[in-house]
Image (cartoon, rainbow over all chains, first blue to last red; front, top):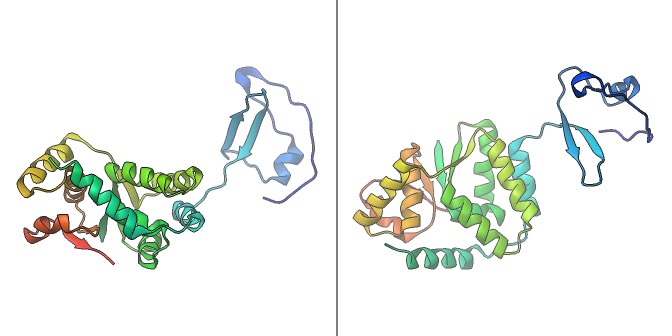
Length: 89
Length: 133
């Protein structure tokens, strides 16, 4: 998402807890009807609203794999096999 | 092709093995599916953590798995449990191997991605095919 100027403002809570996000923010962040926002309630009482950005699940997996350190698969796998054999019925 | 991943495959993927990465990437476009048995999730999580992989990295990997329609985590149910008990006793293989093989069989996987001679009795009886690299 593009960077923009820091802004603050007040909104009034309506019936059933509804609020209106100011138009200039909706326009800047391209928020449209039926978009989903993640609501995070922080321990200090702050409430954050974040637009949900769809991420491809496989991209998430590949990102995790890229971040992984080297693993000595041979040695670790031998450990796993030994543990499994100890639990042989 | 529907594959079942043993912990060995998950470890290979985290070590950036090119074949493991290709199979995962294939799920985006090809008719490739990967099944991850719950016991593999548990074992992999523990081993990766012991290997120094950050918890956030492991969580991101499995969040991707949960969100994917082509890579699926399969929970252990009664049918898999009964099948695993049966083949563990019949083929004298460790219970975890039996749980992985039973999950592969009951979810219709054609190939188990594993490298373990303990599966040999199952291969000989054509219970499951094994692919390693």
